[in-house]
Picture 1 (tube, rainbow, N blue to C red):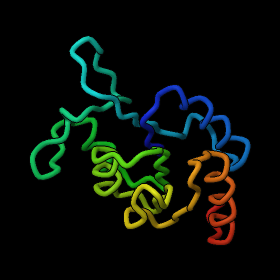
Picture 2 (picture 1 turned 180 degrees about the horizontal axis):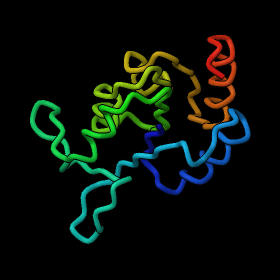
Picture 3 (picture 1 turned 90 degrees about the horizontal axis):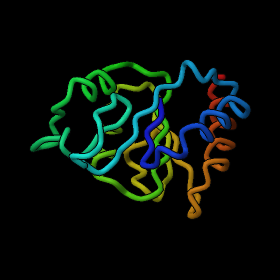
Picture 4 (picture 1 turned 90 degrees about the vertical axis):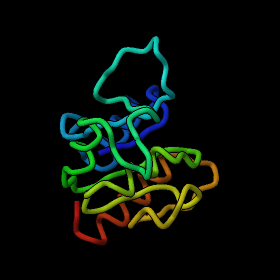
Length: 136
């Protein structure tokens, strides 16, 4: 599963994961944060701050389904600390969680430090660690 804060990166990341880590694009679930707007239509792969309630409770069935699924790997590609994507990462029941150290290293099992937030660096380091852990 992938958490993003920029929908434009979805195809790039899916392509990179396919080549670097041999992931099948059909097996990747994307969840993209975007600020709430009344003009935007509701699409299941997007979520907004309106779907997270008081004390970090999840209001939408879509988010509950996402966090309750036991993904093999959850990668958070957000490039700035975001309370809402962090809440989803924290609630997730994924077996392994990965992301940038500059976001919040306590949320992740695999932490990559790269101040430029380069997705290619994260993917390269993930490949290295997943190979060591015999996950790929």
